[in-house]
Image (cartoon, rainbow, N blue to C red; front, side, top):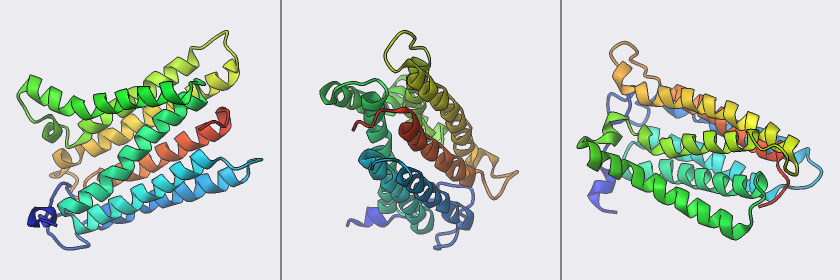
Length: 234
């Protein structure tokens, strides 16, 4: 790897040096993702038949925790990839699953919409930076990348909650209400992520660990909603 891949990063309030345990709370709070993955697998195991897509996504939740642990301990550029890649995979895989399972779309249309969603998501930050003339990623403390996900979550939830007169409407309404509640929790967790650096003076520990804990709850809620309210379709 080039030397730049080992360049140290100091992205969060809790980190004050380059040592392995400089972010103990941020690092250890990633156990919440492992707990969420374990809880989802137990929940899935109580079903009448296996749910392979949910199992795969639960595995991604565990990888989110492990990758984030690496980033908050090693804090170098390559470990940032270990942090963000599992998150991106989960976001887009769940979006695809939601279109298939909650809206009953075929694989082709669901894949096409997922690719469109990915394109919008990856293009949003550069577009806003170009339009505003400021580094939107820096201003938002890196949270701008999650805006498409929370908008999609609110959009899917609202679409399901307002779907009268269609087959399986009660199940879709239940899924919609659940997703709207999860989206609200996601908004709170994203606020803690965004405010971490700006609150350093008053909260030296930072607030990023709350993003981990609450976001683990978000991922758990998303997978349980897929188990409870969706026809089992990948």
